Image (cartoon, rainbow, N blue to C red; front, side, top):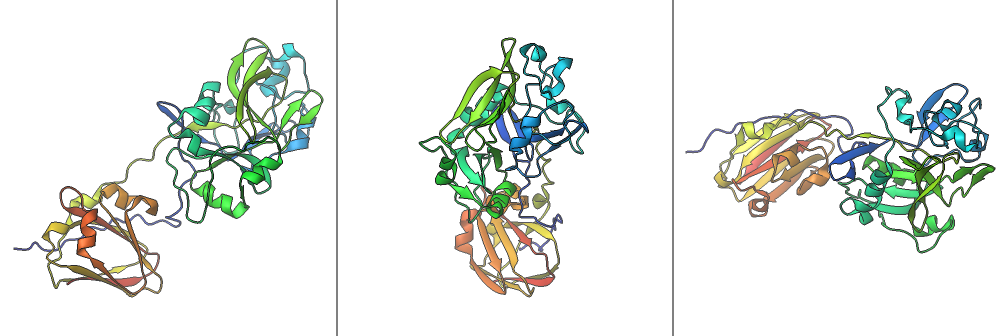
Length: 382
């Protein structure tokens, strides 16, 4: 005897459900992941304000030659930060070695934008090295590029799925120089926005600040680590079109700062798929009205006598149908996680033999309907 069909609706629709949050995870050690800030660190010495660049590809270049404790403007190059009051936060015109003696003090200790103090911090040299070369599949998750007219290096998150319409080439050019970035690959601001939504990070190469001015803008990008080297130097990373080089330099040189924060995975959503099961005997019709809801169902494939399932949709815009062999995938908001996807504009017929491959070991499959628009959905087992 067939059981009565029951439905469970999982209501979790939000605008932009297909967008992947920027806060993607990057491994910086075997047991630690971080989130990169949305841009390089910037500071207004006279006003005492800290912020991140409005875009990841932004850098201030020539303004950094004015770096001083009383400068009335924004800078994004800093001398190495220590607890020495002679050059607090590395915001100083001084190039005297003794002014930078002392212990490292993290730029993230400041109130940055609207974030509370100590939200962000600076990676150690080993953590930078890990994300560049040691994490799983590291070489495939890094590539030089020109993004919206800025040269730099793209870092991809640990769990990267390249968005549709985007072609990314990992690796380095075989030559040095500013022109090599665009020769390797380029992305427009619009293309970068898509990649950024998928979690990509861009580190622009804005040069470095020497005692007598800015150098290598557009061909090299110096980034500080939190790691000291002896008493007068610190470890930095030099990003180039041909390589990423780890080095040491005197602390009175100026480099860019890109901060991170600890990655905290979002709590898993309730496993509502398992609370009830849809059974559709042959010649059964199930109807429901949908309007802006994310609905997830567990379907018992084994008890279906039907050979095909016909889906009718009356909405003016397509209904998105996702089928997966795992509840978490069906609940997930990223359609890259599902194994079957159909956009239904009016009527679609699904072959039950085809659907069998999507069942789990207990004979269930998981179905999600997604629409922003009102309409009636009818499912007929034939």
